[in-house]
Image (cartoon, rainbow, N blue to C red; front, side, top):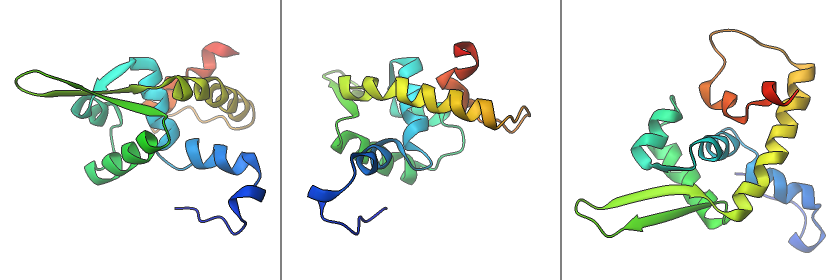
Length: 127
């Protein structure tokens, strides 16, 4: 994970933003949860297609710690846990959609390798 070289009090706020939704999986998980609203771990794993359990678990832990995702436990038998975006997490979605629109204008790749979770931002419908 990124380790800042500067003291936290003099870092650029952009660094914080990139720490939150940057990286390979953070933004993808945010976009999937934005579209699906609430998912169990196994459903999220299926939506993410090619993420390992270890990476999904560690990424969710970071997103939980940063108050982007919330984990809701239901008192049922069998136990049920669902993940969804917090208000802070929902506030990131328009930023990610803007990045997708910008990237779509400068980088076009239409093929079978386009990741399903990358389509969750639905930047094409925002043009």
